[in-house]
Image (tube, rainbow, N blue to C red; front, side, top):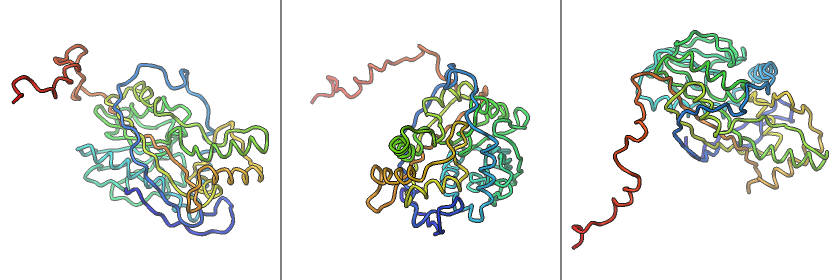
Length: 351
């Protein structure tokens, strides 16, 4: 996608949850911020403990069903469409055909619509939301829909050649366990390609709400869900059994008319906070103060405000004997110290 993707947003009266954002919404792709190849780690998970019950999964299901039931629900799909296309691009980078693929938490199938039958022959689409599955987008790939929780995949071991996931894993309580299940349902030499929201997502909204709540109410409560940091992904994927890991980050910035449009669109996406410790209501004075702080700290010259979504992309392979293996430690025949001598002229090079 180009760095100036513009999307027309429809005008709707009021600021009720079903209202759409006003004016124009601009998506700016800030480009690749980091790209690293990682070796699997044998350490613990990010928390150093077992899985934690952070999110109310039943509430997340209700949120997604509600969002999918909106008459204008597809106009909130712009972020999922963008990220889904980027996940599909990573599938195309692998020069092979996948007989059977699984989309974990795929909703309306924003990945499959960008793929062809020459790349994926059959697709299996899962989601916790029945309403989202019913609104699956058309695709030339034969697709089977399965209502399933991302934390409990109902498939046999060694079933799929490819597993993909886009913007679903950041709502998982037991992310290490979910990754292990994905590893199990993959065939040997199968690949997992996923995208999830990262830790710096919506930092503008988070900061504005915290400052406003501290000023007006003498303290603040969490309104933005906690997200995974990129430094944890290598450990989590390696602990799940994946090898040949690749993780990179992309920032996608969307411009909105104001803070109410940001929160309305998050509701329309089904991306509202569902953490158990969330605070469900905001005082009117706090919202007005947060809107003013948002524009003051982050506002653009045209009057819009940016909302940044940090997207973490990950690729991991299930081990197989045919895969290339790293050389043994100490088997190198050259030293890094010799690299500095390569550009130095020798005595025979002198005129």
